[in-house]
Image (cartoon, rainbow over all chains, first blue to last red; front, side, top):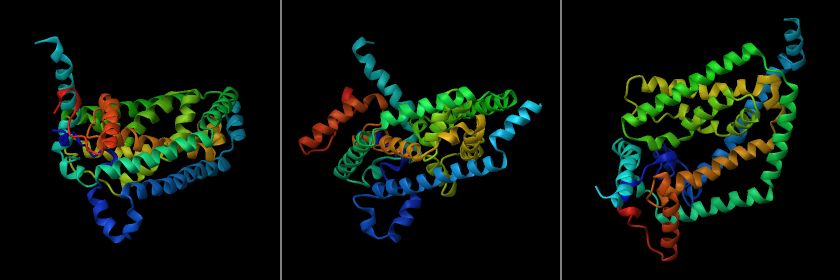
Length: 77
Length: 258
């Protein structure tokens, strides 16, 4: 029964089927001590890039609709 | 029924609604558990939790967080709330809450409520709260949630949708993920770009730090100690430490659950 408690929430227990397909293609030293460390590092990198991508997109919107313009539009209404 | 049996009955009931269906769907189980040795679980988690603790202290996260909250409060005080924008935010917030309730319904139907702690579900709830909030909470959630959109993006690019076979469950999955990916952009630009103005490398680091800590504590302690129920984590952690010290694996559960 103790083993039956094991649930794979957030791939912390075992890799998914898709990961099983990808892992043989990468050097094994990259998956040391396990795939979870590699995924953690990938998430650090991709998470940072995604965060800056969202902020860049919002900054781009701000160049088109600056806050001052929004304020003046509100006053005009 | 004797009163001394009550905790066991309650724990068994909770175990049933939290985990049973998850295992039946194949999201875990003994084969999955055998993928990594318990020693690797312990060593890897210990390493990353030490990294998290070191970053917390060295980078002085509490001090920087307080400064961030102070700045956001000052910016929000200068920014009026647009009525039509507020109506829109409340409507979208309620869409989030209803979708979250819908997922609870789906997961309780198949007795796998443990899956409610998955980041995509939590992000859905948090974004709903961010939209509902007019204070610092909303801005803080907006900023800290950005790195966690990695998982949502991966879930869209490499969807693992096996087992989502209830009425409209697959449609809800895709709608939820599109919503999660698009709403943060609105959260960044609303209220005259308050969130964007306060966005920095600190909030990116904070978001990643939260992800790291949650994965190797909340999500990991359960699997590593063969206990998944949240209320058992403390005792399981103690059991895990004891097992590590005595160099043997944990083979039984507390409260006579095995």
